[in-house]
Structure formats: structure tokens, C-alpha cells
Length: 304
Image (cartoon, rainbow, N blue to C red; front, side):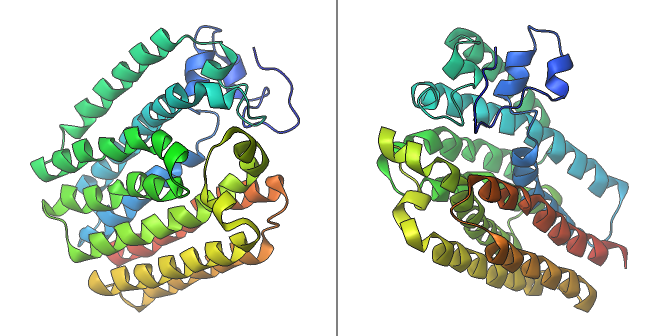
């Protein structure tokens, strides 16, 4: 049951309410009502697949769709792992206290069974690719598991999240080339700083509660300087994206799209009200649009 709250990440009125009662906790556990996390996990992979493809083809489209399905499943698995680690903390935080494990709507045993089912599906998709991609996919599980622990021992859990969420930048290129090209490494680094920026903004929502219960974040670490550091992360993101574009041989038309994406990052910083949780959530969600602009810029290169 979802209880009313002034500021929560679970919405009562969404498509999940139409699901059979037995399915609702699992859908909420995977955050299926909030696809932004899936987008942020998927988009670096799409950038890399498109950058590695000399021409758009059915093969390219198939790999993009497989990565999309994989991102949906593995983002869900990551959410289950996170909530298993954090169920006691989540119960103390206004925004998260209605999550299925924190509220008691779902037992730990059922969540673990569901997790292994998701990991099995993820593995089935991963086995569709070459050995380099499979190896990278397996390695990516290490930061996925460690991320919830990082929030307890370091002020920079967003860095661990960045290492996790941007493995697609390596895997996408590897799926096409069976190697890890230089541009993919640059995309991975760009994604790391992008995540540091957007997840610092996202963490602003929980600063008060996190400080009370002992959870660490870059938002708490930076305090009143949070805008300055977030802008710095975005500047590094922009610089590394430009480097990636050069390394991948992007033409002028693609660079125009890249420029629009960089403008979007600075729009985020300019319009963000760092004292308003609603503004932080809105700016955080706008990163899907930023990522799609980057993907479109690389897509243009494959069709012209």
C-alpha cells in the first residue's frame, strides 16, 4: 500500500495501478513507473554503438534494441540490489519510505528470487554478443553491487554510480568492433562526469534526510558550492564529448548536434534552483533529452 507523502518518488496515479495487485510491488521495485534511470543507463551505449557504426543498418538497430532491453532489465536488477541494501535507510527518508521493501509490501526473500530472475534474463541477452562485450558486462556487476555500500563509506557514491551507469559506452563499441576504441574510453569518461553532475543535482532532494541518517553524497559534501561543482562536472563532460567526437571522426553536422547538447547542459545549471527539490528532480530528468541529442548527433553520422 502506498501512503500519502508530501515529497516521494512513488506516485499513486500511474499505469502501475492498473496491474494485478501481486505484480505492483515488483514493478515499483524495478522503478518501471520512472523510466529515467533506464534511459540514463541506455544512452551511453547508444552513443557508442552509433559512433562505432560506419553506416546505420538492421544490425545496428538490433543491437540498439538488445541494449535497450538489457538496460531495462539490469536497471531493474540494480534497483533491487540497491533497495535490499537500503531498505532500513529508505524507511527513514521521506522520498523513499514507500518503496516496496522499505514499506514491507514485499519480503526480502521474494526480492532475492526476483533479482536472480532478472539477472538470468540479463545474462541471456548478454550472451547474444561477442566475448569482449560479455566480459565487460560481467565486470560491470562489481560497481553495481558496491554502489549502495559506497553511500556509507565515501562522500562520492555518485562516482561509483558513474562507473556503473556508463559501462554501456564501452560495451556498445565492443559489440560492434570486438575491441574498446579510444573514443569509447573518452565517452566512458564523459559519462562518468555527466553522472557526477546529474546525480549530485538529484541528491539535493535528500540532503536533509541523508545528513540525519548518515548517508553520504556529493550534494552534502559540496554544500553551498553544489552549483559550482555540478557546473565543473558538466564542463568536463562537454570537453570529453568533444574529444570523443574528434576520435570517432565526427563531421561538422554531428558537431552542431553536439553543440546543442552542450548548450542544454549549461541551460540546466542556469535554470536549476538548488534549494528546491522539485527543481532538482526536473533538471535531473531533463538529462534524458541531453542524452538523446548526443545519440541523434552520432546517428546523423551513420546516415549521411
